Structure formats: structure tokens, C-alpha cells
Length: 172
Image 1 (tube, rainbow, N blue to C red):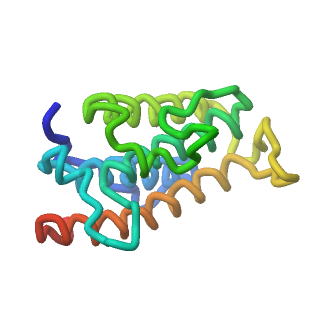
Image 2: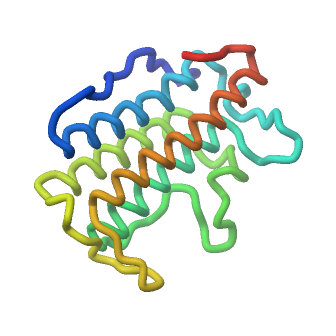
């Protein structure tokens, strides 16, 4: 894979049950991330156009893969997971070590983490709390959906700025 080729995304629901709306906004956000990275070369995806930051478009895709793993697989389901990029020695490796996986692997890992998140949440009530409490911080599945939407939204703002600095593209 030389570029990401995801040019479509689902539209979030404008009305309907709470669960369906939360899921639709999360799916919209996941698809938007890859859509905003589409068409760029690997070298462009690795660029860090803000001198004071280690953020890159590729790093953000890798980071969101990690976030999917942490909240759905580790925290909600209580599973022991092996993070694709983060290491004990470098907890920010998803941003720092951009050569550790090919673009195809990064997109495959992202898709797999999202699919696993969907699978783990399916059939569970929004009021169900996490299996793994961390630092006395227990949340329910509803909170995880809201947090994930917020996390994607924040990083999609970063993506907009990075993409504009890389090739001038805005607003799609």
C-alpha cells in the first residue's frame, strides 16, 4: 500500500436511539480519520510539519489504534492486549517510531482494532461498566463511546491542521 484510499464515510444519524447515534458518530469519526489521510504518500503521512510537535498523520492513525485497544479491549473487556506500537520503554512510540510498521500494516491494525472494538461492545448495555478499573476510575460503555468520539474529534482537528500544512487541503 503506497497511500490510504478511503474516500467515503458514513453519515452520522440525525435522530434515533441513543446507542445507534453514538455508534454512528464513532463510525463517522473513524472513517473521517482515514479519509483525511487519503491520497498522501507514506513520506507525507510521516511528515511532522509543526516543529515543536512529534505529531504526524501516520502517528495519529497509530495513536487511535492504541486508543481503540485501550478503551474497548483492555478497559471495557478486561483483556490483556499487546499494543501494536506502544512499548514500556517508549509509551509514545506510536508518534516516535514511524518506521516500525508499513502503511499497509498500520491501516490493517487500525481496521482490526476498530472491528475488535465493535465486536466487544456488541450486545452490551450502555450502562455496563468496565471490567478493568484503573486508578479507581470506573466508567460505563456510554462514557467510552462519548470519550472515543471526543478523542477522535480532538485529533481530527490536529489532522486538519497537519494536512493543510502538508499539501494545502482543507475541509473535507
